[in-house]
Length: 114
Length: 114
Image 1: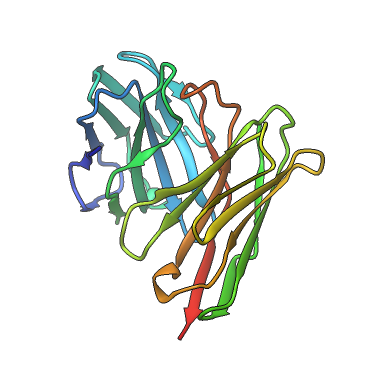
Image 2 (image 1 turned 45 degrees about the vertical axis):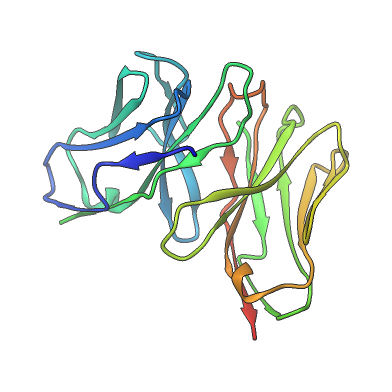
């Protein structure tokens, strides 16, 4: 059973703080993704990674960066948090490399920036 | 890039009746179309998917149809039950079996009325 975990379910930060959101998957998946989910806007892709130390911009990368130093871990970084980054953040992984396209999601982190 | 539009944004259906959710996509090279279900407070999970070499796929009470010419695909749920109440997301990608990103629609909140 695929397990994708995220470091926090709820997080409250101040404007200007540097914020780290961590995601870990235990299925040796190649691909990992970060989305933000906002009402009426669906799931929007921030960044994704097909391999260790590799990253690609998604549709809304501004204000975010990512790090993938190990295959199982994908971190999302808000360099200087702003109120418009208040959202639900979802991490996902998929097997890649000729496997299925199914993305398995983590439980989400609800981030509030004050 | 790909753009996926999803309608309706909300749908209320009497228990036992059918529900249909429709999506259109813009990229004619897209070839993989999954549907994800997100119950309240839970993570999105894949419920069914279809590839462009197939026109229809069924799994018990759910089915997906694809019209490549019109760049349109739909989710059909028959004999709806209370546990079908959730937000449903369609998505599209240029799948190379796990090496492409998904573009999601904005979601449909389905409510089953007992």
